[in-house]
Length: 149
Figure 1 (cartoon, rainbow, N blue to C red):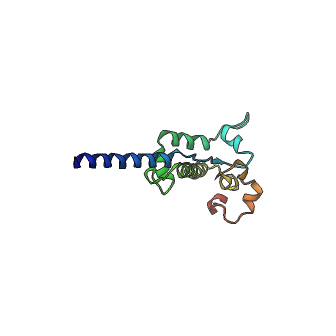
Figure 2: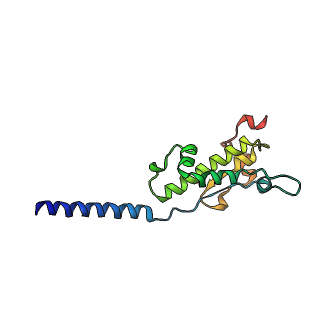
Figure 3: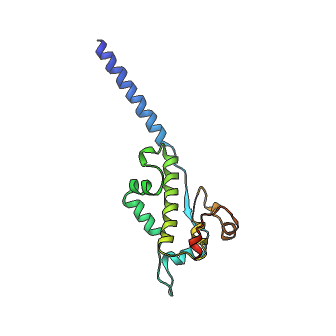
């Protein structure tokens, strides 16, 4: 009978853990936007009748879809196993995407004044994307002296 009681307690403990884990992951991850306020970015990404496309968002999204675990590991200081809950997961993916988009802009040589790359941001609301004048005025933007060579 004692063994039976221990099995029941063990089962209850596992069920409690599963409920806690379910509750932790059941919440809304929130919404994050990764974008740029630079108006000409869409023309660079998709091209025009006079300019071939030079995509920088699409390749980053494709990489994330192909292997999210590797994408997060390669573009953040975390692994998916270190992410604790949906809010952190969505936030981590957004910042990984921001970093990779900026990296692709640099790799493809799409640096003009550095404004487009600097304006790529992961933000909680779309209205929070900084406009070009704000990016140019900030002293903490992610610019590299090589961008101006």
